[in-house]
Length: 133
Image (cartoon, rainbow, N blue to C red; front, side, top):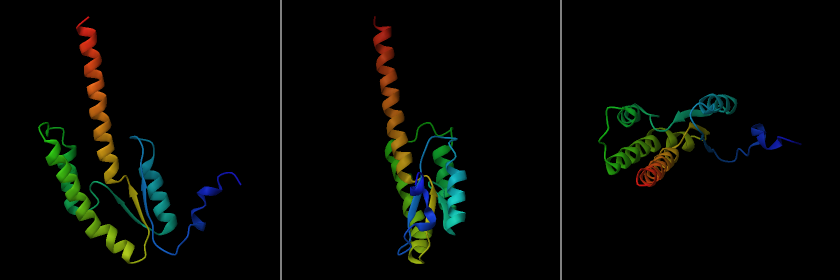
């Protein structure tokens, strides 16, 4: 049957699952994550910012005034958020046998960061070619 792979009601329940929604801004990740978490009776979370400490890290990472944050510092902040999130939300929920549904995961931020960096380099290289001709 078409769409049968969407039958989450038949998802194996022998162990809890971590499910992360990824996608571009405004595509409905939060809406769909909320719907799925409700349907599964799962813990709903997000990365970055799924804990009180993570919310503060998220503020730093998303603050447009932070224009001079080094890539290493950014990576360490993201890693710190992930460690706190794992200790405070993910591990306890999964150990209790609960599914966890996340609005994004730490990996999307790292991927987006890398993609944006590549795009900036591409644009800069093309502009250099245009300006030097």
